[in-house]
Length: 152
Image 1 (cartoon, rainbow, N blue to C red):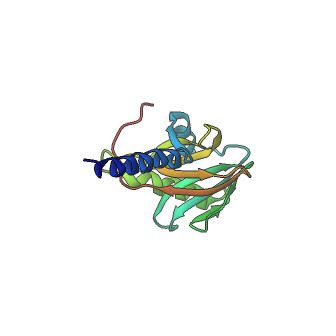
Image 2 (cartoon, rainbow, N blue to C red):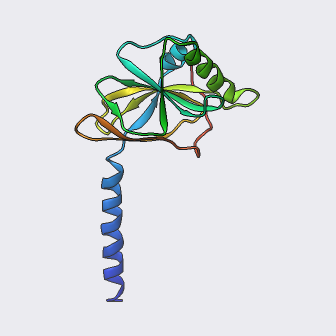
């Protein structure tokens, strides 16, 4: 029985630290206004736009607040006033065609709840990690969460 205490103590410490490390991540917050803005091809002022995936099959589009820097080679910049931008939005919108999984709009929030930008995708979860210098270290879609419905 004495040998069990150190194991329980070790797991308690690991659990506490795992909770701390998760608090470093931000989140996506569902926002119907963001969905409507993307579907209407409206560009938000003060944002730089990027997409994840290929031009023919984009997975997500993100508009990043200009006070942040996206530090990832997996996101490709896109000029929001271009026809390509409209095409990318339309292709993301087609992701849910014929299924119950439709693209949604989200606000991207850092760990403190500050507005980092906007997100449009059928993928409803992402790892969001920022540093104190305003750099987005991680902005990665998490494919496991794809169910649900957004009220408009």
